[in-house]
Length: 435
Image (cartoon, rainbow, N blue to C red):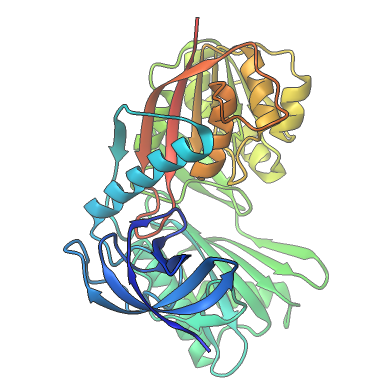
């Protein structure tokens, strides 16, 4: 049986929870603010660490705000709707500084440049699960669960995505959505007009042409539709296979299985900040994706080398480079493998790895390439701290990693609030090789 706790919240930690202490235990509880007094109930424990659910805020902080979404605190997709946008950003900066210091020994006392935009209606891509039981409905998985919470609205979606969701939900509840669907992923173009859909079936209940016709009849804005029969591991494509995103004067074909930045309001700002003042003979773009940074780099450097392990994204990059009239040396492989064998000596490196980060060993190899400047875009502060510890030769660098012969110093830190209402932090760090 859960034990009731009365807690004083000390601070927020990365992951969206508040931290408190009681009777020798460390407690983590969500949907709170520093300085608040709350009632909570223990959900689980591991030795002296407790995880609790919030029961009541008995003394709220002045920064507490009214959530815009009626599903907040049940859906789990958002963590900070109870916090005003300005306070969200301030807290994220605190968490970033503390994480870099604690895990990487990175004591950054300089400014953290803020990049913000509209806090709602920003997402250009979303995934919805289909509840097969009655009544059928679309929704999101509950945190750490296979249970699906049906939803009626999601205010972080772009207008076209929100409209798409509403129509799909209506199909689901009215019984016109084809049976056997497990998940639907939707994305929109930069104009927020055209739709791309990925629909995963356990198995096709009808011929693919009939399924495609049903979706297109309900959603005339569909530009491209990809259907997956998981039992046969078979894809069926209806449409060109991509949508077009525009940023910085460049056009990007983004296919169904490729990654593109999801905050439609900050794409342009991100592109310009990463590539600012970049020029020279050779640039290296690691985790290049569809060529978001590759194309502007190709305009500023005599040669650009791109690396990405996703074959779909690599094909998109080649098409995008050809469309823009650039010749790119493109490699479809893991960044770590490329770094181990490359003989290239770039002057400028940009990397935008997934949540796992670059990795300590790969960070050391990267340092040895001796680029004049490195721009590291990270979606996980803890992994960023680990990799920066290697690049800057911090005393906190992981054990077993030899000291690199070339050391870097941090010159700029930027926080892009790409995911307002959530705990996620996107950090851009600019590093310069020390003399």
